[in-house]
Each structure stands twice: as structure tokens, then as C-alpha cells.
Image 1: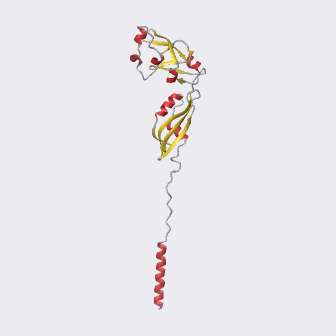
Image 2 (image 1 turned 180 degrees about the horizontal axis):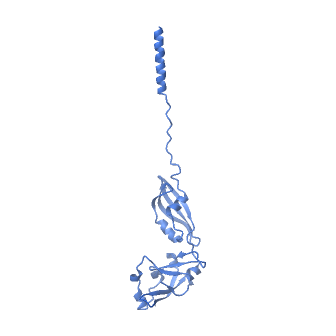
Length: 224
């Protein structure tokens, strides 16, 4: 009888030990969280476009509207799919864009403010301080109709719409600030007069003309 009791005690002891081996509590598994990596802030959008503050509002808007796609910004993959203009102020050099896109499969739509861009001078400054230069991306030596102007003395075709294809107009404030490039909307307010070809002692010459901007007549003899 004593042997039976001892054997039973040993069996119970092994059973208890075996139960301890199988009663371990599993560690909880926390699902991964995305945290802030997919939260797109206004600063992320500003960095995404990285717009040159020397541009005027028109130039900045044109660049932003064409700059779509994916970029890694501050450790986040930001995909901009649409850009639209909420408001803009050329005189203040500011604008607001509505940006749509996604980051980490999380869509977003944000209104983002931009400031510090080239401010537009007054109409008087636009007319009186305008500077004309040939466009670098245009082959004006072969494409501009010098013959009609120089040989035929015909100035009829040399309108603002024609000159805009070959010439950039820029202006600035009296104090030298607000360096500004004429936009297509500005060119629509320009009237061209007194167009002439000025020959010099070399084989080349200059085109001179006078601009009137939004009713304000500028100085005569703008040359390119």
C-alpha cells in the first residue's frame, strides 16, 4: 500500500510539472502603426514643389501645376495627383493651392499657402522701367522678320503679340526691388509703337520700340 501511495504521488508531481510547461502566457502582438509617416503637412507640400522665390506668381503657378508625381519628402513618400489655384495675389507675391494626393495609401487634400515670390510693380513702373531682352530659347536671328522692318520699313506686323514670341519684358520698382517678368496677361495689356531698326557700325543692329502698359506710356526706345 505504501508503494502504491508513493507511486501515485510521483505521478501527480510529473503531471504538475508538465502542466507548468504548457501554461506559458503568450506575449501580446501589437499591430504595426503608421504613426505620422503618412500625415502630409503644409511644410511637406512646400518642400515638394521647392519653388524659386525669384519667380513671379504666374511662373510659380505654372511650375507647380506641372510638377505632379511621387517624391520622398521628410522620410515620407508623397504622391501629388492634382493641383488647383484657390487664390493668388501678384502684387503681394502670394497664392494658395489646393493639393490632392496620397501618402502611404492614405489620401489627402490640403489648402497650402505660398508667399515671398516676386511682387508685381505698379502700372507706372511696369511701363517706365520695362527692360527688353531677346528670349534665349528662341532663334530670333533666323525667325524674327528683320527684312520687313529694315528693308521694307513696314511696322504693321510688329505688335505685342508678335514681339512676345521673341522678347522678354521685365520691370522693377523705383528702388530696384520687385524684379518682375511680364506674364501673358501683362503682355495682353501692352501696346507697341514706334518700332524701328537701329543700325550701328558693326554688322548687327538693334530693334527699338515704345511700350504702353495698361494705358501708361513708357519711355521711348526700348532696345533689344
